[in-house]
Every structure is written in structure tokens, then in C-alpha cells.
Length: 459
Image (cartoon, one colour):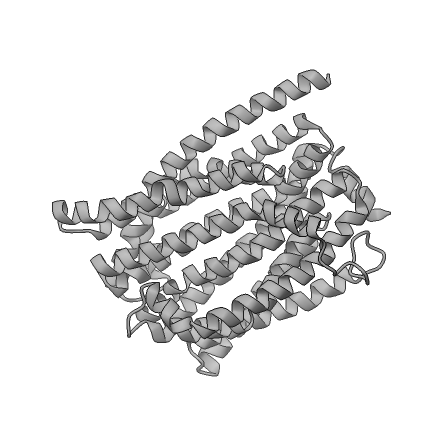
């Protein structure tokens, strides 16, 4: 009964209060998650060396690929649960939970095994050299062995948020961060496991949180809980979940492909250290992106529930509030990246050449941050209300329509003009951010008009 009350509040409680209630735990969780990635990089950079940072950066495409398959299930199912709760279809929401567990087991094991079998060729394709592949392989071997744990942990966290438990989802992430932060230096320095120690700490921390999640979701007093009869895959649930989750899946898949091109371009025009510089700049930019993702996660169940309940005025209000918050966050990231990039880069490494390269790259990465928050919220907005095709299109505009051509065209042109092709790789990022935001603004404006027309008809 208590769970039904929590779900109903999504359609009646003040929007600002709801957004704070749902977004703050998600923001804390995403910030903590991003921080432990940064902390890992710091431990690896300071404790293993500059080339280890480059090796870690080479794993980003594979990590994105793993995240793509994880979000295909987790994000899609979470949105489906929110909409079904809004429609008071509690039985289907329950079965979605069971299908999440089954799909994560299948996809998690399959992805881990297949990528382990072809790990070396994959890493060389991603831009590894004989120097950096040692670090990348050692890190990813451990991560892939625990891939099913990662998928299950992320999937169940998405379900917890969607079913009215944002704080518990936050606690799960914070637990992961705290355990990882404690274990990483012990494994890296104390046990002298190097970069493998960082990966082992990550998986161990996720196992601890996963055990706690299962404990929460086996509570029979909750409306949604793990029980017999819900694990058999249902075609309707699977197809609906995958259709909605296709947007973040394609976004992560495109991000994987794009990072491969970025790494290859930087290696060709700048060498292994340039890849490490991108690794540092990307970690910092991603920190602010993760905060916006936390805002989006707070918005998602509110927008999904109220859309299902046909309360379009509440949907518009929560989206606008989320956009304001996201813009404030990304603008702060812009200021940090432009004003003190050398100071930030020096936290990761003592190698002066790497610091200089990372600082230059950081300025390009954050250049369009003041407007990118809007684009991210708009993409998530369409996903939250089940408009998968629009969300997919917006997910791909930045990566494939704008960034991809830029990475192919600008580096050779600037290499001929200035002798520095690497700067063409960096410039491609803010250019694509600007163009993608313009497209998002156009689509969002049209959707607002439709909502206003629906409200007039309803009233």
C-alpha cells in the first residue's frame, strides 16, 4: 500500500518538490559514480604512470559498449515501469522487474564472454599501441569477467528509481563509490596489482551493492518485489523495453564508435599521450554530464507517470525545471574547464607534457557546455514519455550527423593549414554540440505546441 501511495504522489505532489525529491538522490549517486571514475584515474595516473592513463582511455569505447547493452535493458524497463505505474497497471510493472533480471543475466554473460575472446584485436582496433595495450588489457579483463554484475547492478538501480525508491538507488551507488575508493589504493599500492587493482576494486564494490539491492527487492511488503512467476520473458515486455531503451543504447553505441575515431585521430596526429589527454579531459567533462544525467533520472519517473496520466501541464513543468538546472550545471563546468584546466589536469598526473595536452583539450571539450544541458534534457524527455524514435534521432544527431563528419574532415584540413591535425579532433566536439542543440530546440518547441493543444482539448 505504501508503494502505491508513493507512485500516486508523482501525479499530485508539487512538481518542484518532486523533482528535488527524485533528482537530488540521483544527482548524488551520479556525482559519486563519476567521482570514483575520476579517483580511479588519479590512482592509476599517480601510481602506475602516464601511459597507464592512455591505456585506461583506450577502454572507454568498450566501457561505452557495455553501458549501451546495460541501458538497453535498464533504461527501457525503468521507463516502462513508470508509465505502467501511472496507468495503475501494477501486475505488468511487476513482470517488467522479473524480465529485467532475466535479460541482464543473458546479455551480461554473453557480452562478457564474447568480448573476452576477442579482447586484443578489439583494443588494437580502438587505437592501442604495443605500449598501451598491456594496461588496457589488464583493466578490461577484470571488468569483463564481472560484466554480468555491472549490468545487473545498473539495471536494478534504474528499477529502484522508477518504482519510487530514489534514495535507495542513491545509497546503492554511494556504497559502490565508498567501497571502491577504499579498495582501489589497497589493491593498487598495497597488493601492487597496478591497473588490475583498480578494476578489481570496481567489480568488488558493485557486488556489495548488488547484494544490498537484492535484499531490498526481495521484501514482500513492497509492491514491486522479486517472486516466482515473473522471470519468464514476455514478448510484449521485452519488445517495449528494448524499443524505449534503444535510444540510450544507440547513443552509447554511437559514443563507442566516436571515441574510437577520436582515439585513432589523436594517436595519428598526437601520439599515445594525446589519447591520455583526452582521457583526462573526458573524465572532467563527464563529471558534469553525469550530474545532468542525475537530473534526467529524477525527471524520468515524474514525466513518465504524468504523461501516462495525461497531465501534460505537469510534464511541461518538470521538463522546464530540469532544463534550468541542467544549464546551471553545464555552465559551471564550462567555467572550470576554461579558467583552470592546468590545475585540474595536474591532479591526474605529474607529467608536464600530458598536463599541457589535457588542459588544451579540456578547453575545447567544455566550450559549448552552457547549451549542451538543454540538448541532453530534451533527448531524455522524449525517452521518458515513450517517444523512442524522437529520442533516438536526437541521440544520434550529435554523434553521427555532426561529430562523425567533423572527425573525418577537420583534422586533415587543419594538419595542412596549421601543421596540427590534433586540434581538428578537438574542435569537432564543440561544433557538434552547437549544431545538435539547435536541432533539439526545434523539436522541443514543436512538442510543446502539441502538449498545449492537448491541454486545450482536455479543458
